[in-house]
Length: 399
Length: 104
Image (cartoon, rainbow over all chains, first blue to last red; front, side):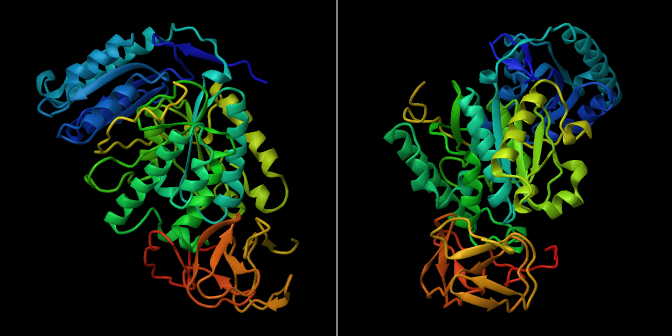
């Protein structure tokens, strides 16, 4: 049993990391921002950003949430100067959260070289400033944990996802907030899921979120189903869905949130990641990291990532625990995998035993242990255009 | 259930391979022994018993699609003989569902 501690933040939340984030506000500032970050190979300095030049409420909200995430200690914004992103508002939001913040505008700072130099100077100062923050005791009931699956195959649904579900059951029992997602991957599970909702109204909202996903994917022409899924033994979207659904475990569902909504208390939450309104901007999430970023924007301190075919990604801001469902994949990619749920397939360990290992690894990671992807320096990040309406009153019945 | 196939739920009409099952392997099903007519890769499904055209395919005790033709006990159950009740499965080059990418 680990005694958890966290970095206290002004909003009352606690972080399990103390990262300086360098955020580009348009693709045109990406290179300069990344040059600033590469100046700190041995420090916790990470790159995030939004590539688009056109304004978007979702992206602005996501950037606010990410830059004021409890794992973040300080923020440097890097702007080209003429993009639409409202950097003054973003900087104000970070400043009001009590974090050191600075905005550099390349067009005003003298170009690439001088912006990189000024950025590195500021980051150096910020690292010194936030190094003084003392960790304080933190409970498991203050943790938010997300789960995603990617590179799924037929083993994901019979080993990795059920084990992640067991870990979720244990964490929810201990008071943590756990988030599962991708309503497009729950098509066919809506009735079963609605039965688990804390209120009938929430059940209806869960059902409608899946129906929305179904309409959305029908408009796009096909669902969240890649060629590798079929090669791995999955035949239909609902088969993939049920395999994904089991990672939610057996707890009652406490609420339905959208990206950037922070669970108000412990419990199990479904994140609705499919945009509202007409189909715009293309696919809801163009890759696994887009889902992980949305979990983080909703406050996830870390994420569980179940993979069958074998993903190697990590994430900026919040560590990723990779659970390998397929024993053959585990043997091929063991340096990248934190948990071998393939043991379940081979009859070596039970779903419960692997679930316990995952739960213990969540606590150890929260206490400061690095995950495999984190130690190797994986800091993937992607944020694209979307649009959402706010959640309805039925979505958080206990709030 | 012993052997290379796993029954996930009592009401299921498919079994899941928990290891690669070679062509020609004799498998003891409840309905009697069958011989696999092809290699079944890890995590792929076979019919637990004869399945009629139009019947629901059950896995985890929950429906994953509908049989588009009669499927005999022990036969590979995949995109070539079942279809989704929801979004059609995206057309694949390897229509029988086994690609070179599957570890065998």
